[in-house]
Image: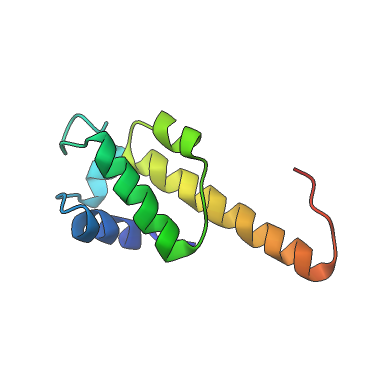
Length: 94
């Protein structure tokens, strides 16, 4: 699981965008000048850090950084559940 603080650090360091915790709730075109390339770079950075791949379609539907964080948090949770089920020999329904 990636923390909100780690997510913000990635945005600041990898994308060089000034993002603070309150900015997570703002639409991309409000406080920070987000472009589609920023989303792609953010997806790649978070995937590399977590080792979890999130749905690109869902990520592009989101209009806030908080929404993108939630998609990755859900994907990390799903990945963890799948690993647990695989380790116990259970088959997880999709």
